[in-house]
Amino acid sequence: MTHGHPHTSHHGAQHSTQHDHHWQDDADQAEILDLDAEILAEHIAAITAWLPLKTSPRRIVDLGCGTGAGTFALLNRFPEAHVIAVDASPGHLHRLRKKACAQDVDDRVRTVQADLDAADWPDLGTPDLVWASASMHHMADPGRALRNVHDMLPSGGLFAVVELAGFPRFLPEGAPEDRPGLEERCHAATDHFHAEHVPYRGADWGPMLTAAGFTLDDEHTITVNIDGAHSEAIGHYALNALRRIRGAATEALPAEDLAALDRLLDTDGPHSVLRRDDLSVRTERTVWAARRT
Image 1 (cartoon, rainbow, N blue to C red):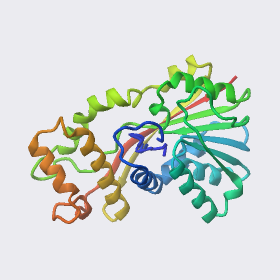
Image 2: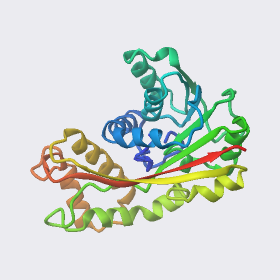
Image 3: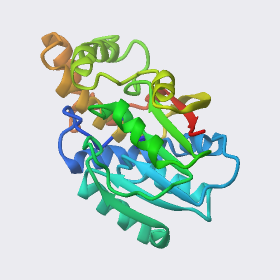
Image 4: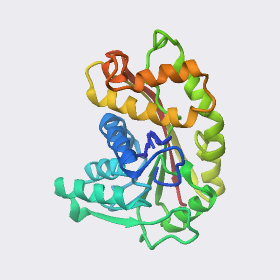
């Protein structure tokens, strides 16, 4: 979720279920994935509507499904479809299954726990559409994963790779007042960490898809800019995101920036990010649509 899959994602989010070393435990990750799904629902729906499909898919695989942002968007977009939701986390899959039951679509969803970094994937059938949101950039060997998807699809089958352009931004320019530009410095401080642990974050997937045997149909970027002035969810989204950035940036930030960041993260303090009415969610989400010919 798509991840954001605030792919880090996370984004991602969003955001992914593979080996994301800077996210804490399963429950924390699930929370931010659910927030990502709620806040970016309109944008996820826009991407599913944009997909260059020749016919409505009946069999869909959601790779690195997280807690189901893509799964449920696809079920809503294609009411005749069934989705196989694949993730390494049993906790995420349990959460997705509970949502499916609550929405009365559990008969259209099958969950599969699998490590997508493994050489051999489980049998996922022959889908018409494979969706991977904020999950591909976490693969240890993305080339192998792309070839696995290529081999899974029939001729004419579509593969949609969706990625966020890094972690979203939340604070306005010049904030916080005592340390203007803090958020950008935090992101800059995590660059080395991400280059080491998540080297494919921000990659151009077009050439890699072509190298794996796909024909690239199209590429589309959606700009996200959501006003959070009256959104409690965006406050919590920012809180969770900044906590993860704090963990990755600790060694690279000066003490003054860490102190300012901690004031934002102190939910009981007067400077808590939850008390701000000037937040927004700003990022870009790109989708590559590739076909097996």
